[in-house]
Image (cartoon, rainbow, N blue to C red; front, side, top):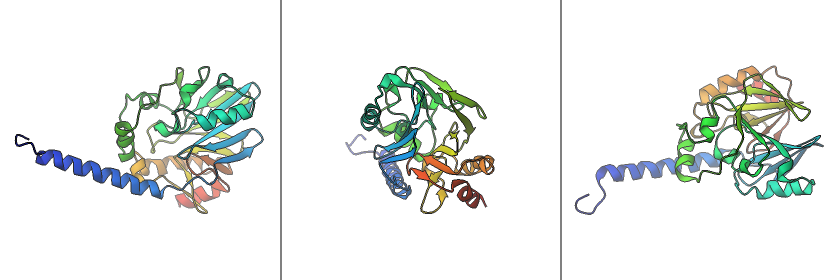
Length: 252
């Protein structure tokens, strides 16, 4: 760069970076979009989209639990929903995070009394101590602002059954989208994050650029074929019915 012009190596890196962002943009357009901004799943559960990701609010005996908190670190829509239900941030006692991508936990810091639960090894991803290798994971780490970290970050175990203020949720470790991705089964609903998404009359995996290993993601879903769920509540599309039958079709 002695003559003031970028070196060939630097220009190559800039081109590769631009191509990577273009690929991520194209892939993002392939992700199914939110069916509704607000979904009433059950008398106790409401799903909210902030325009990028869903957060799921579960009313419990003594407050509320959240499954993911969305991409908006201000939590504007999430806090408005809680206020509408007569709840304050201090009434949220548990946040269950499906995986460590920032668009799923950015508002977790707003709930100071909540235990924030993540999958095996995923706390390092949330804290930025473990690098992800997918194109989207690298992009998020490099070009998006790290949200404030939640105060009480804990890891759950595969197969664990959680007692969340009287509500029973079973943990399934489904590595692939990220190493510590998990799903939470509540009654007939499987909160699937990005490890399984609804589609047009089907269920699908996230595009390859968003996952560490699509192959591992698919393999990890085999454990769910006989699990008694009928619906999935995912991270970007919303609620999908007949989901177990659709999963079996996907895995054939």
